[in-house]
Length: 80
Image (spheres, rainbow, N blue to C red):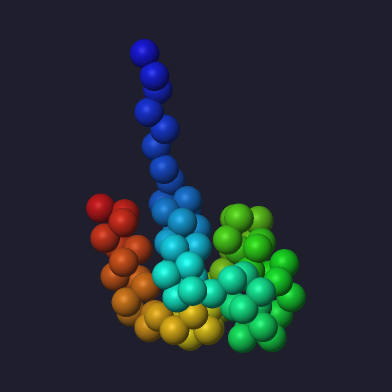
C-alpha cells in the first residue's frame, strides 16, 4: 500500500511562489534583477533554504506583478 505524502503549508507557499513566477513568464534571474538581489536569493526562498518576512514577500509579489492580497488569497485557497 502506497503512503500518501502530505504537503506542509510551507511547501504550499514555496510551490505557489514558483507558480506565480512561472505564470508571469519570469525566470529566477528576472525576479532577482527586479529585486536587485543575486539569483541565489530567489533560489533560496523558492527551495525553502531561506524564509521571507512579510515585507520581503510584498517586494517579491511586486517584482512578479502579483498584488500581495491576491497572492495571500491564492495561498489561503491552496491551504484549504
